[in-house]
Length: 233
Image (tube, rainbow, N blue to C red; front, side, top):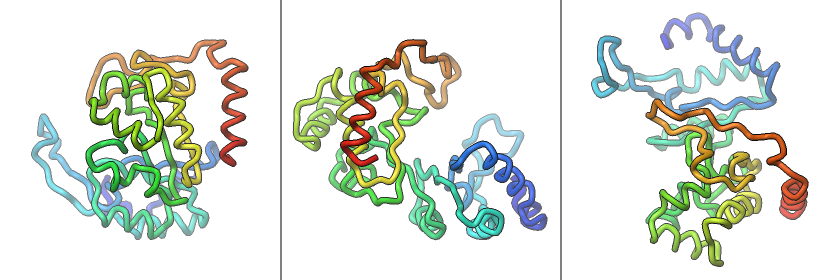
């Protein structure tokens, strides 16, 4: 985006876009949030994104303009990937909730991971996985190492199997201090990698999964209601 031009226009295009979306949704997520601080610019003639350079984004000025339009700032910052402390500082300056992905929590740095529940703050949105992750059952079955599985069990304090890992991580998300929990339907249905929504950087087989009539039954409805009451959601 030509941020200098947008700045001179007082970000009217963005403000109009946000205004329209807030007619449809209660909360909006800013994808690739770090690009509001700095972004990778690639010349149009390049065939790949390898050759480019970092450029400064609009930073706080943009969000201050949005605040004039929408003082409550009902936004989520997608603060994942290769981000810096400055990105987190921008997020926190405007008190945007960040995203916590449980599937990312069980690597060698588990104890100090920003994705492990004991480091969450209330102003967070916790997911088992997002649309760009495998289903939790598929992740556990084909993407985790033996060491990761041991860490999952050690952290949770009980034995976990492929058939039970989805419920285990859903309950972990529900009992966390994060103010909002978002669970993909595939995890509620305990589906494997065949139901994965999207694989980033791939061109085939994405966005094809559809929930069939009858898959969400009374048993699952009762279970969701119980978890909601049990964990005060």
